[in-house]
Image (cartoon, rainbow, N blue to C red; front, side, top):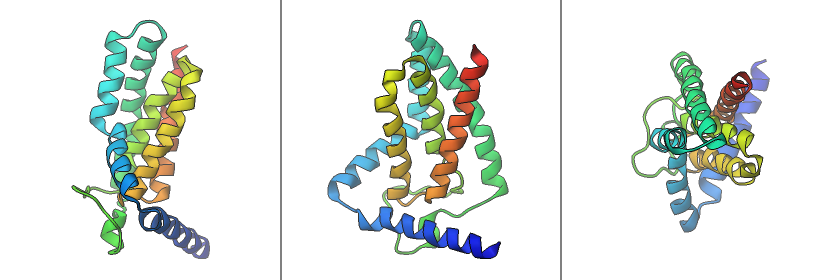
Length: 175
């Protein structure tokens, strides 16, 4: 079993270094530094709350569902971060490229990725055409977390799964 784990860790570290170091570009530095905030608490709460309070019909329902999914999704995130304290990549790999104000809490799973996936699904369920924009946007937020040296790929993968599961459950139980 440890051979499999070592193989997975090795390849994940290689993927991390590729995204964090090999595709560096001035434009991407600015783009990812800004887009990553769409998965932060402020953006996800404000977007969901505004839709819940000021939206009408399906938009209002999606906003309420997004708030519920966002809340539910962060319960397992908090538990997992305490139970499996994984250091952030920039703390483990000295050659990691980081940007201003790197986080110091545990990296597994990615809270930003969890948040963005938990709020987009209700909107896509309500208006499927939004999926063309929102699903790639959520993946880009996850990618930004790796690019900025804050998360490993598996942190973002698990975050996306938790956020998606919480929002699919919320939407399914709503109706």
